[in-house]
Length: 347
Image (cartoon, rainbow, N blue to C red; front, side):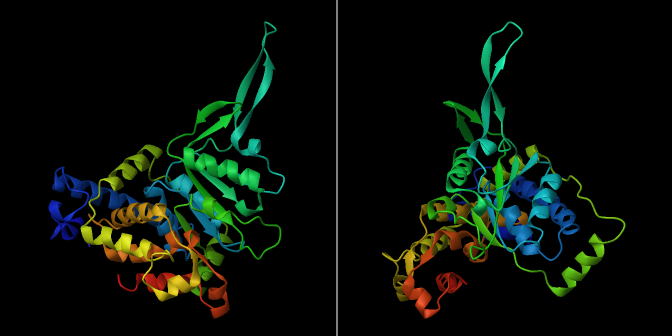
């Protein structure tokens, strides 16, 4: 659907975010950005095989200005995806390999005492790898809780505090963390309150047979495809501001509120939720769905999001913001089952 098509029947009075600017200009900007994002998808697709949904959800998160938690077993190109995104989007990228002995200073940076030529001593701040635009925290659940907290605080505040001094992080700043499945040994599960800092939790599955065949042939030959820069950091920031200008209809806003509020066991009208959910999503989930639905529409070159966008984004946005109780585990109920039930009225 084009931006022109999505504008029909979408008047300013029916939108919570009213189109106070020239709608034709807004359409032109969205269509131009959609074309460039199509090229971004195409370039990434030459490097990453069989993970179109993962790539699209990651791009939606970056357009919404958020952070991503990628969950999957080793060897599914999670690290390669982050490296490719850094190149294609023109972002300064750094990587942290999380281990149990990793300290907060190894991520944030530290102050060192230096002596000048005149003999005077002073402290100088040495920034850590968090001072980047795209930070990959590989196997974040192998880091200690203290180190996890330091990184997640930087994600929330976009600054770090060292020796009582605040140091702002570069803009834009995004964290793409990878996590091993929790059943693997040597992991420290992220606390629920800290999981909420990630806009999306994206599950990375095995590629299908044809994608794995293409991957096997393309990566074992004499020539290996290399990523090419398509956007710049400034372009991404412009795109993020454009996403926030996208109008959202009343039906989509009400759909988001209904979806999130029905997932809370103390106020839900669904028996399944009251019986099986220990705690539900907070207001940050509503904010995430609102931004992500706008970003998904822009990624497809549409002027306004629909309820289909909300349904498509429900699982990656809600799964890490909800928890099941013992009754659910005893009944064999999963979070996917619960979210499917929540989305049924919107489908």
